[in-house]
Figure 1 (cartoon, one colour):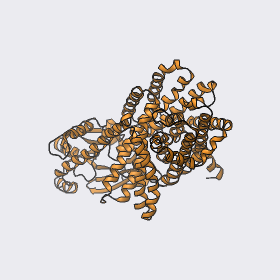
Figure 2: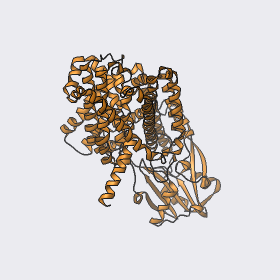
Figure 3: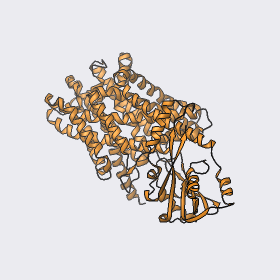
Figure 4: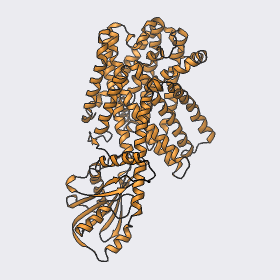
Amino acid sequence: MSSEHAKDSLRTLTLAAIGIVYGDIGTSPLYTMKEVFSTEHGVALTPANLLGVVSLILWGLTIIVSLKYVSLILRADNRGEGGIMALMALALSSVTSKSRWYQPVMFAGLVGAALFFGDGVITPAISVLSAMEGLEVATPVMQPYVVPLTVAVLVGLYMAQHHGTAGIGKWFGPIVLIWFLALAAMGVVNIVHNPAILAAINPLHALDFLTRNSWLAFVALGAVVLAFTGAEALYADMGHFGKRPIRMAWFFVVFPGLALNYLGQGALLLANPAAVVNPFFHQLGPWSIYPLVALSTVATVIASQATISGTFSMTHQAIALGFLPRMRIMYTSEREIGQIYIPLMNWLQLCAVVLAVIGFGSSSKLASAYGIAVTLTMLITTVLTFFVIRYRWHYNLLLCVAATGFFFIIDLAFVSANSLKIVHGGWFPILLGAVMITIMLTWRDGRHLVYENLKKHMIPLEEFLQSLFISPPTRVEGTAIFFRAEGDGVPHAMLHNLLHNKVLHERTIFLTVTNADIPTVPPQERIQIEPLGHQCYQVNVHYGFKDERDIPHALELCSQKGLELDMMNTSFFIARQTVIPSVGSGMAMWREALYATMSRNARDAADYYRVPSNRVIELGTQVEI
């Protein structure tokens, strides 16, 4: 690749990263300053407090985003992929399954993933609602229409998800770039009018604010953290853009735009304290409110889109890692594997988002619910990073404790401050997270119990084949493929076929899908073939947790290893299990019933693995847990 082409590619990726990665944190100036000085937190709007708050935000962006995420966390990639699920898989592979830390690390990762689903509900709600609240600033007459308009925008956004973002996604980067340029320009205008705010760059003002206000300052941290929401996105989207574009976008565009705007809002409030009701929309005067409402609405929709796409990606990874049942997954782009749409998650999330908007009714009330999910996820990310740098990178223990301990203390302070808001709305993301963690652990434990039950009656495959071919059944033309779980014996579908049809296809393949704790498996490592004799084969298909599950496409690779398959003359035999709850399984009956319900409604294996329905023969079996 020529140096010019490499530069063009870097610029393109950097621009794309601005649109996808930084939409969430980029819309934080809409509500952060307003919330810090709201009556709920009791922080008086004095020049000293204003300098302290702005200084806290600036140095929080520097320490939490620039140092923790951009400098440290981005290094903890799982074969180029990031995000809480990728980090959990990396940490689990670092401590190994026999370690006493394995279960705590897995639970921490699942809690982080569950909280991400809660965050995915609140981000669209608070972002779009805060943009629409600009109409109230323009004229109080619009106040009754803010919530209905917000709901209308969000419903339209979710209804458009099945089209994917391949077409409009190319506009995300330029639009959000305009947004950051507007943030910077508004900040500069206000700084020029009141340059005294530049004193906030001195971190002593932040320290003075914390020591002088003590308890009030601690409470205010619950609102200050709103300036850092979206920091997780730059790690989660690392696999789409790479580290360098994300870092360049942050240091050259996002950080300067945010810093200048927060300084500008501080300068505005120094000159006009009355603007504290909504400092963002007062930055340029009455003439600018409607244009800012339009621009901020577009920016918040893009920020919401990134969160929705992130939810789809997280769900896909959780299914692949065995923590959620199979769901219908639609691929909305032929060129980009990351472009997926999961209808069930889309409509469930829309219902939760609309309930949040209507139930809370304002961005101020939603802000109380927002911080707890974000800060807990930050804390869990720090904990998982410790296990990666200690047990995978094998750094000195003291260095690991020092590196992550510093961020752990900061994260813990923010979590503690936000815990005060649990009764004022913080319960909402915790409730959503508790529901998700219950579902994920129930699905994992249920699958384990079903496997243990089946293993009691398992017939070893090799011994069965030896006895079968002593007096072989009639062989018929074609190829039969039987799905077989990893470590399982003879597939139930094969036993049913032999019992009822008393025939065996001239070529029989036992297909096992293996899910690896890595993002992607290279094509050359996708297929493993083991001859079992008598034209029977064990075929193992390996997928990473971000790979597209396409069995017919994977089986095309068999020809490269000497096993030619004619898909038009091939049948797939799948046993669909009906789970029956039973007493004494080791799992509460209500969880067994939940697992059985999820199992009944899980997507068919054939559909999930993209096997043509006209090639599938499904046989039903019952199994207790």
